[in-house]
Length: 168
Image 1 (cartoon, rainbow, N blue to C red):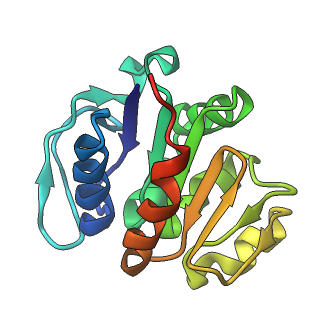
Image 2: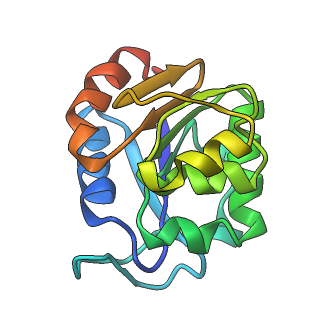
């Protein structure tokens, strides 16, 4: 099983790095992608050299899609390739993980109508307007969509996530 983490300039450092390392610890090969494949810098100054650009991604190569938050999600939601990936993964029943503001990508993809979702409180109204049922829980599992409200909730997300990780 392989995972793909989408990121862009201004990503929330902890949400990307902790998720990346935890997936690797579970034996899941994990790749990072940015809009152009060029180095991106997080909100706290950490830099990532992605493996792929959005155009190089073949969704058939991955079983898990991770959408971290930070300013990166605002940039990614404007990229049709990112929106197509989110829709494809959800439609094909593949696991999608959204953290904090990562739900902005799902909103723009039109992919959360009638879903139970948690997210950063800053985008709570946007999630509701997109047709999702917002819940104030730190972590929500709705079939193949796992959402996490904040980086502080990542440990709880992984406790909920590990049992449902697809096995290759």
